[in-house]
Length: 369
Ligand code: NAD
Image (cartoon, rainbow, N blue to C red):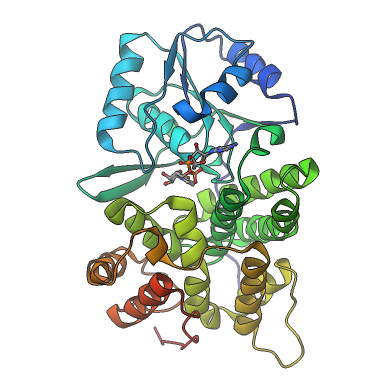
């Protein structure tokens, strides 16, 4: 079969070094010739952000950071940036702070330097997201891609194990979903599989010893590979489901990804056996003789999640049975037409109910397209 695709590589400087965040950030501020820097960091991350920003002049600290970027927060941050004549946005923290910086960049074109402290991966994508009237809208725009990312694994050591696990599985979800996303190609699939391999090696070490700095570095590398793959391949079924759950039912982002992922994998893997086999291998459990590749991939993810003590029930984060019909309707409406398995109200009801209650991922029943 011939191979035809168009692949775009996003341009971004990555500065990676443990203990180097302050120096690397100062160099980036200088490179941008910026004199009016706005630092976006939640109040909880202020002390950490002050350490990272110790060598730069800060014109404005902005700490009204809320997950899923409510549109009102975006508007406040945009107004503050305009009022203070800001010429560079620096965000220190997880995906929520980066998301707010992106919302400002979307309308102002201001450049962003991102200093991530979780494994959400938003720093490496040109994807923005905002929530209004219980609906989270996402889009892509190169103006929101941070011009530079400063990775420093020492900043992630304080991330509690439960959050490290959930955030790390959010990254694994970028890898898995990228395999069959609308713009999946051999380049982003290779990045996704290497990201999955790296994360599957690093996360159990972090769960066992949260201060293991080499493991934290490895996880950040895996997170970057995963996010680059996701940005290139586009948003697939898993991300569409998690975005609607976050925007409409205010569920926490990382935990939602961690819970929903095995169910989407179980649904899609039977339709893409070659990719399932490569994923199983990347997750450290190659397909055994006579084993179905989809079963191998599902078992490999299940083993990783069990080792990590990953969360299992959306009910623990506030979703209720009465929310399922609306979630199903939104999921069916948002599902990409190219999903390997035809998405129906029936399979979405089964999937979301299983994710709600923590039931085993539904046995993979192949629905013909
Ligand atoms: P988050 O930024 O809300 O952080 C989660 C929690 O972790 C917060 O309480 C935060 O204070 C804490 N935290 C962060 N770093 C810490 C550290 N080093 N030590 C201790 N605590 C720390 O959550 P998140 O999962 O990083 O990001 C979620 C948001 O990012 C969502 O809004 C999601 O939509 C967005 N996102 C966007 C993209 C994209 O490409 N656009 C990709 C991934 C996530």
